[in-house]
Amino acid sequence: MISKIEIGAVKDYLETNNESELKIARSFLEDIVLELEEIQQYRSIGTVSDCKEAVEMRKVKKLANKEELRNFNGNIYSFRGNCPTCGEKRIVSFDTEYCSKCGQAISWQDDN
Image 1 (tube, helix red, strand yellow):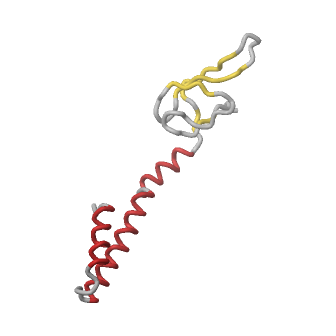
Image 2 (spheres, helix red, strand yellow; image 1 turned 90 degrees about the vertical axis):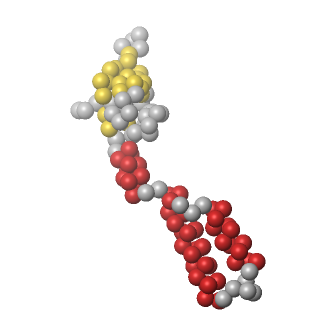
Image 3 (cartoon, one colour; image 1 turned 180 degrees about the vertical axis):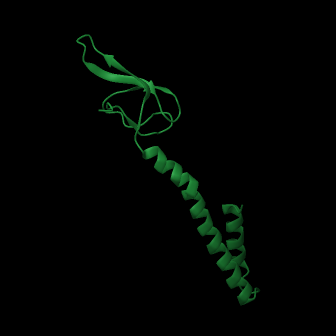
């Protein structure tokens, strides 16, 4: 993998040796720098599998082993259950949308 330092070194070489280099070689190295910078941009965005994983995490899933938590008046104020992705035990209130550990989208609503 080419690092930003190596790309910078090629750029520095091009800037300091422009008189002695052949125009064809200079043009070739400039094209290489552009291509490597583009590759670095794509790598910083992530791979296709990273994208698929992120899309999957946005699909809302129900808590596993869901239990209702009630106040003294018997009203439901929250739920407790396991995240369907990481399995972490979570307390989910009505305004919770995602697992705080793995980021999985969570639904607290009943099935019906």
